[in-house]
Each structure stands twice: as C-alpha cells, then as structure tokens.
Length: 315
Image (tube, rainbow, N blue to C red):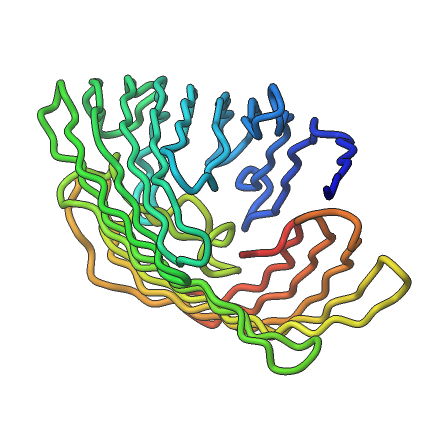
C-alpha cells in the first residue's frame, strides 16, 4: 500500500495588478482576494476592485475547478463596470455603466488533449450618464459567448442583442499565444489578436491602446469596429540569487484599427507600430508577479515615447 500525505498551506491569495497607461488617468489597477479551495474541491470564491478606462469596476465570482476530465464546471459572476467613453477626433464623451452578471459552463477535458471549450450566458443593464454630444440609448443586453481553445489558438464568437435600442451587439475574437524557447533561457514570445464588432454603435466597440495592444499608443481614445495587433518579445533571464532573476526584453508591437466616430460612422484604417526594450525583476517564489519596466518608442500613428511599468508581464 502506498500512502501519500498532503499538507494544505495557504489557499487564500491576493490579486494585485498594476500598469501605467499613456497618461495618469488612463492607468490600470486591480486589487482583490480569492479563496482557491472551498470545501477541499478546488472551488474558487473571489472578489476584486479595479480601476480601468477612467472608472471603477467591481467583480465577484464563484467558480468550480475547470480541469475535471468527466464533468462540466460552472462559474457565476456578478459585476459592476463603468467606462469613460471618449474619442481621438471629437470632444464628445460619456460615462457608460453596466450592472449584471455571467453564468459560464466549461466543458470536460481529456488530459493530454489540447482542446478546451466553454460557453457563457451574459446579461446586464446599461445606462449612460454625463453625456457631452451624442447620448446613446439605455437598455438591457443579453448575449452568449462560446469559446474554443486548441493549444495556442483561441476563438470566440459572441452574439448578443441590446434591448431598448434594438441593436445587434455581436463580437468575434481570434487569439494566438505561444512561447518559442531558443536556448535554455532565451525565449521568443508571440501574442496575436484579431477582433471585430458589428457596425454602427461606438458604445459597442473594441479598444486599442497602450495598456493592451501597442505600447505608446494613447489609451481609451480608439473605439474601433475592427482591429488586429501583435506583440513580439525576446526575453532572456539571468539568475541573480537562488530565487531571483533579472530578465532583459526587447520588443515590437504593431497594430491596425478602424475607428468609430462618436456618431457610429467609420474612419479609414490606421496603423501603429513601436520598438522598445525593458527589464523585469522576477521573484521566482511568486506566481505571475514581478517588476516590469519598459521604454517604448512609437513612430506611428503619432510619434510618442512612453515608459510603462507594471507588476505582471505585458502578456
């Protein structure tokens, strides 16, 4: 008989994330707590408070362990999200506030298989306040969000409908993420994203900026109907001590996007590209937490320099 004794240590963990944007009001920060093992089942109960898109957001969730080979895993989430909507070519602005929730089913998985799949039912009430210029309609959203992941590639199609204004709100997203080891420590990291929404509604758009997309690009200004971007990072780590490492990074981000006007009309496609370098101080005894400092030089669409920093990897 083989007996294995397991000692459970701490399962209550903090959530902490921070990243600068292209200006002080456009920074992104998150703080929260999550209990990872309710009742010894791997079920999570978590909550977080965040600041992004110039507004405060609150999220609470209860989630079963997703890597169970024979059954569906469930997740329920309640959230309050607020966004400060503004535009790169207009003085129009408004605050969008959404109160709602999600119910998610994650499909059974076979260990050794790269296939993962899940589906989400989402509903929320949306109100617009403090409008300067156009005043989008208030209403209720109901939609689905099926997602399929095969190894490095994930695909989502999110059909939805906005009651009140009688608007379609569909969204599609394709992502490729891979790390290619070049030797024992150097690695080439690749992140590619393409996403789009239906026409005619700047209040339902995809967002490109420095926090997620192209470092150095202005944040929260480019409300897009469609966009694509890639992030390439060459990372090389040097061990400083037993559980500390210093990682040097050279990178390039590139993107293309088609903007909405404040009236929902479309602008022509524009491009953005940068080059840069940085470093990360990596405490190897922590998971997904480090000190990241980058210097990005953006030649296009508008020349700009930025020194973004955060406490997680950029992607």
